[in-house]
Length: 455
Image 1: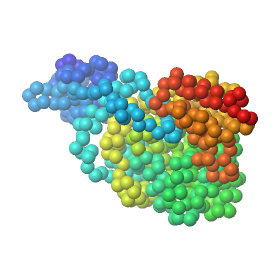
Image 2: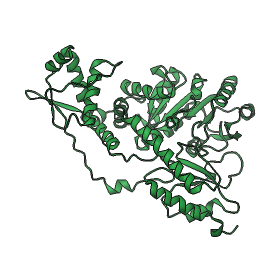
Image 3: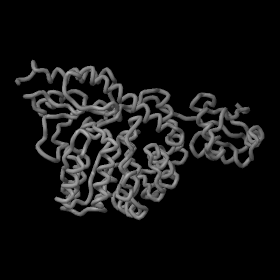
């Protein structure tokens, strides 16, 4: 298609980037296919009425993304992508059902777009195998900032870090702000990953009373006065495991308590990108106190092992980089390059939107099958928080479901304050179809039936 011209150039971007984006869009749309020749740069410049250097830069940008390739004396062509359609069955079998997983994309077009991002990684493979910054290159941090802006976050780039997953980030932050034996506050029922990290560092967790809106501000104030903690940890949106989301008014009240005591907040916003509308992060109300962790495991994919982190100040970001360097050297440049490409070409948002829609569909299945039982849930949560019928123990239910491919986690793993209740986190995501999920939930409902246990 030597007469190809962009159908439309997106406004608000440099023209060279808009042309590169148009090439990517037309490849996705089928207007440009593998091996197709693009018009010579001077001809396209004349057709568009722009400088030759702009088109030259656009072609260079598209080539760096892995979409096209140039051959001296022959011209510029859409790159041929060799993508295997035969997954490795050994890879497919690797899944940890104990984790709270998002549903996995099945749409062929979205999967193809995800695979195309590997073309950019492949084109830059040698560069990406080097040691790089402990907190991401400028391009990666700009992409991170763009992604974070969907949550209303527009921090100075000096405060933004691409980090090697939420767990490593929590470890790095806690290593900076607390010493073994010191106390960290958290929800009365909290994310077990944070419990594990704190335990490894010898920190003592203190659970704070919760109600239907999350941590109670008055209880937080009392706990701060009683325990002199180094920080508060919160998972405020689609809280794991209860699925509750702290409403805006409660977030403001908690921020005021933190500011009154000058207490650091670690805000784990793992699920904040999933709902169409989430309350603003607490970091916007108390930026000078908050380490905001926007992990990508739930909104894009856990295998990336990446998080977008905002430090309270540029100085804190510098110290975070040193802590990350000591802990993990750097986030994976291969993963960073892939995610940056996905953010720039819109694939990341496509994944996020799929997860949003599919999680809602799976919650509807849970309502259909388990609606007669008591549990907490939210439209876009990946799990429900199930209250077991009276007389039935959580260990018994887990044992009965041992051979089913569904993630069950007893309340013991989450409980920090008080005795664990007879509750289970029931996972709805991961590599399971809707019909398989429905079948597993029916089996669970049968296992909870009064006819199948001694009350």
